Image (cartoon, rainbow, N blue to C red; front, side):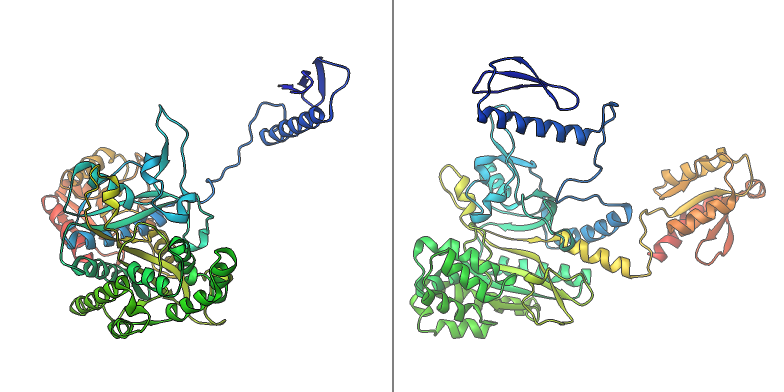
Length: 522
């Protein structure tokens, strides 16, 4: 390895031990060059230590990248179950699915996420294009609508997104993770699509049986109106909104300190904001705030409050108001929200708690907050940012925080004695004697061709006990056993693994019998 001292023009060669051999230059070196060479040697020695000795064998650290994880078959089975629940709900509400590239032009993502823009992963210049990994599925969706001139669609999209965040793996916070989005784009009467999005969150969280939850709702117009009447300067709206958004992680005293000391807000304005953001309720709170002396001065706030009242009237019809609360502390920091915003928070005893500094509740509380598991809102201006003529397409949507849900489901599975099946095999084709491989392969082929999920051991003469043990360990419910006598009689011995009951079934009736028994079990 050659190292050049830039000031003095001397060139040195490092030996295997890190010793320098001068191959050109002056007798004396300046202090800067000596320092530069020392730094380069340190880097080389560190590299050598990481690669191992001089035996040519590389020693790799086997680990996943920071903020990412592998999923074993058991975890994937849980994940698939959750996805199926969510997708069936999205389809029940009439959504169709799309997909977009995992990376976008950098300019597509720039300026859409407020202070969170620093978390976007930028890629190196590839063929003259500056690219970034997608931060969420909403901005690519807006770009897709504008690019294809789509004005009405109800879509869902499940895919990975990337954030250069500080990961908290135990809380389901990663740098690479899935989002499950449902969005309604189009010009419709106020609050009907918004109410359906909240109904979807209610259905999914109820069906997954994760424990108690609540859905907080607010409106960006109410927030902006509140900031205005409390004396927040216009140019500080977004940054103060980002600070208010931290109330689910920090106590009010720390939030106020950030507003005043870091964001330059007056203490009087911060105190007025504090009075409002402590308010929670339902339609009654919206009615009360419409009569509030300060809030009634803001047309923006009044429009938002009127829509909150309308929203709750639809939520009553959808039978979800028992879980929905109008919460003025909800801010959601993303810049693209223009109206209603919402967030679902899960609380459940027995799940891993969030970090101590993120807990606002009293110590020893039985129920711990595990953070937001769903969030969304209305973003009527985002599509227009991409349209050449600025044509707007009103949109509202929700994103399910799938990784946090996975973390909770995995904890529940670990705590439960119930075995998680990692395959869907319905029947194992086994043999009771030797030299029946061909017969087993013929029968498993018949089952596969009929759409039956079947399996066979990859040995010519497996022991029957080994085959039965495999079924018990894998949760396979049925075993189709072949023997010389069964082949002569034209039957198959069908064994129920759970009860060990055995019955001879005519070969021609086997497929229907397997279907009947497995459909009964499901």
